[in-house]
Length: 152
Image 1 (cartoon, rainbow, N blue to C red):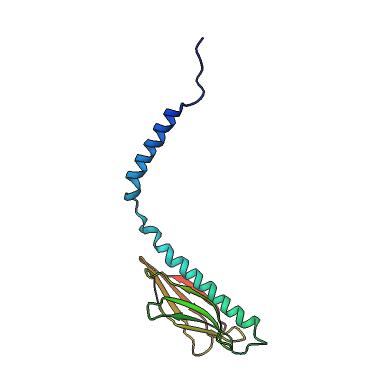
Image 2: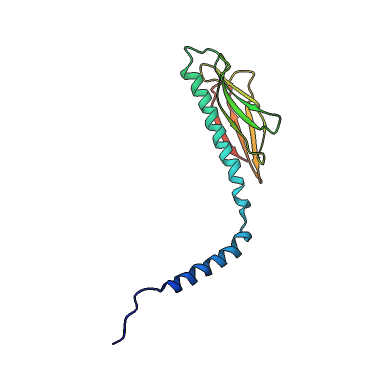
């Protein structure tokens, strides 16, 4: 009577794993990973938009105790090296972040939000972020403090 074979032997599995490893070693260096680098600018733009909205929300929610408001200041020279959120009344730094040196972040340097959530007159209304052919423009409306991000 013939014995039915229902699985693979250990030697067969090891040979397959070695074969897949050789193919991976050849294929990985040839992959084009530059497509993912544009995602860094996208992620940074989203992070800055979130932090601008956070600064505005802090200014509104703390309006009774802090009539000066909150600010998001870019740090370093253009292209900026990072940014920080500060309480304008106490000059306390609430949060700070660095920006990857491969990403260009230019234009607006200071966004100050008053107790009504509006952008103060001395504030910049635009910030441009770019990396590997992707460019994002963050725009803040003076009257309402609304933050909008668009890919160019």
